[in-house]
Amino acid sequence: MNLFCKNLILVVVLLSAVLSFDTVHAQSDADSVKMTMTLNKFGNLKFSVRGTETITIDWGDGTVDERRLTPGVVTYSHHYIKRDHYTVVIYGQNITHLNCNGGKITNLNVSNNTGLKCLRCAGNKLTDLDVSRNTALTNLICDNNRLTVLDVSANTALTNLVCDNNQLTVLDVSANTALTDLHCSENQLTGLDVSRNSLLINLICKGNQLRSLDATNTNSLMLLNCRKNKLTAEAMNVLFEMLNVTQKEGKILYIRNNPGTDTCNQSITTDKHWKIDTSFM
Image: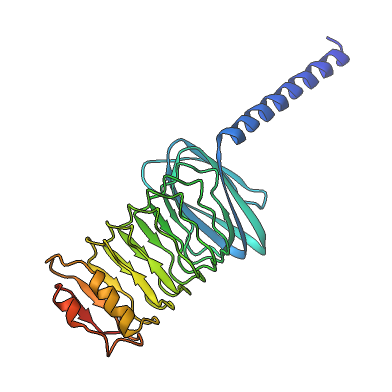
């Protein structure tokens, strides 16, 4: 076989390999979930996932890893040698849990991951978080970020929502009728309506600017912490009238540091078997 034929065969083989790779990669992209995290740091980035099949992680610095997921939560980490903006993309089907707490992340895109059930992204620098397509979410932990808006109207399966220490002025949980735990402290909320959340057990909304709190129909409520708000005595008396009268042991109400704390009618709550705690909790 002459040199020309040998070179032609080699070119054909290489071209076939490239086309095959591109086809597989394109199909993988089409079928995969992508989660993009943009950060400005050096050192280690760590996150945890749970799911099935395999995932491919593009760390944004030229490093690409492919890992097979095992049962349970799996933690991955990567070391960056210089301070820069990196976009990390995770390709993988059937990812149900993602924990990227404390990664100094400025952007997180989970819009393609419709099967995500638990998202933990607390302690980052997020100013926006779109979970409108994550309709399977049951747990959303996004506290200690810089969020000014949080739309959870599409997340009707949510049972646990933690969004403390953000910059929220409005929080609508009327569609989240499965909620049992709501933590929305240290925001800028002026009103909060949980009248549609009849399964709510724990409500912690301290450190806002609440002037009204509608707790009608919260017959499962056991803990209400609304201290350090703007509730007047009249507003607190209205709230007390709404509270359930179930004779369950351990119902606790925290009301310290409201304008009406000392002049409200606390006997309304004690008659309903609530214990008022004026501590600094």
